[in-house]
Image 1 (tube, one colour):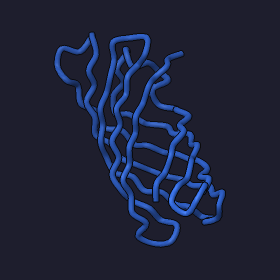
Image 2 (cartoon, one colour):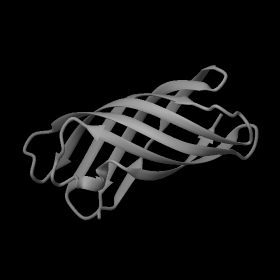
Image 3 (cartoon, rainbow, N blue to C red):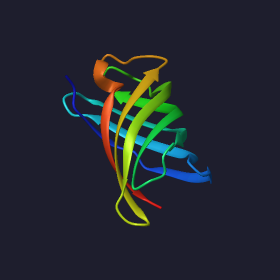
Image 4 (cartoon, rainbow, N blue to C red):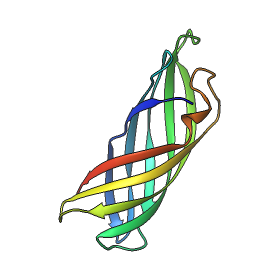
Length: 127
């Protein structure tokens, strides 16, 4: 089992009610080994119910670079991201969310570990 620290800022725009698209950035670090990754990409989310508590589903496409003790050069990868979650509207401009995100990579680094894909995430949203 691996533990990661991840910072994942996103900038999105609601182009239709319930539909959001935007850009994302990820900064990863595995706690138990010499491994880190940076990625950027695009994402889209759909909020079928627009109430104070709302579920959502999302998809994304990311480009990344890995840095690890077993990699001499900066290794590049691509990933498709699927996520489901719940958003809690705390005020008109502030929300919190919890989501489960899974990444599907075109290659796997042994130092990254098998748990690199599925993650439970907590977030704060500003609208």
